Length: 563
Image 1 (cartoon, one colour):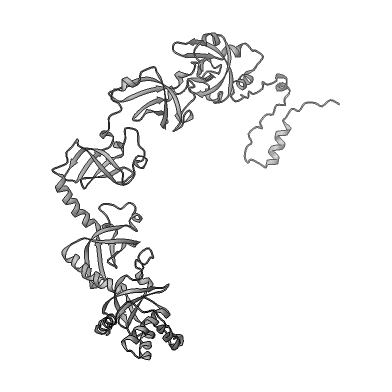
Image 2 (cartoon, one colour):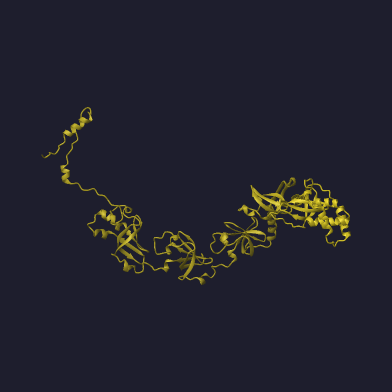
């Protein structure tokens, strides 16, 4: 529709051809386009524009038909009436609607905005609204789109409620105890327990989603409007269960869709039913988190392990839908061969190494290194580290592989007879002290035992007082057994060969505490010392302290002083 001067000139031209008076038609035009008197155009200018306007193609009969149609319209509008019109203008605050005849309505722009803040209409579109007010200062009919939607929505919702038909709604926000949902322009409430079957692990994930719901309560014109998605899911589950009983069987391999992921596993939809893939059944490789393997929406092959219709439980497996990597394992791996792998996980007792997907082997802590001082496997290897290992053994029945790392390094016991023959003095570090003796590290992978009887300590002494872990001591090789990897040490020859060293020096060399001995008494000093005799017992009273002291001093034989 035309606006401004051009529109007024067109109407004025049409009015002249229909025989309308200028003033009457101008009043109609100003009312139609809401021009205020102060903003009215110069009449002569408008008339002049109409006189010089190019002839239109429409015939006089067309204008007559137009006028006749407009006169037949009912321009008597009341609040609450539903009207239809065409959008003629979209402004920053209001949208103007041509209602036909002399009437034009105005709708708040916000009334037409969708959830994204956009207006899903354009100029020329047909629109339905409800009259909100006709008595306005500017003479414009105020319309409301939301009231119209709500009026129509009430009818649809009441029909869906009575017929138990599902309705579509958009979850707009989460509130105390549930969610706010918009259905047909009306606000409804869905309790948290009804948003889905089972426990809702992440309530925020439903905000912004559009779901189908069943109306469980609708009263007072929508003031009590409650929804349930779980009830609809339960109905669908019953229908799917009935249909699936004739299709599903144990051992069957199907393609399912991942519906949700939990810490303990993954739920997969098959034939409209939810089955559980436990995390241990996700892959032949060890899986710590299902999120590392799949994501929601993935289509994956699964094998049905078991079906319990009485409890509505279906156990599935992803790894058993694939070939077992342990099949023909002995053709792929051989004992004594060297392989490279990735450390999958580390425990205190050893490290698990993935040789290939689904094939893990264990390196026991005793097979990590020749060094016996390692107490934890994490002291040698870390998760994710690439290592070279030797395959020590395969147990196909138990699906176990033994690996070793120290076998790839030189054995420190090779040629030990040449380096540590009996009688050889060596220096080592105290590794551990026990009641029966001391373990001494001679070099990496070579640890000897210093028995308590060979420690050169007093009989019955606490050996822990003389040797501390980490202390350096000198020992002598007493016995050597390469076959049993046993090395026996002694300290006796070292202590006995040095008579000038007293016990204190020997204890200091052993890393233990220094003993203190009481020095011997000098006989001469003992003879020269004055002898103090105790005073005889007194009869009667004890007397004063001064009397007792005087009597005692008088009986002491003091040495004579030379002049």
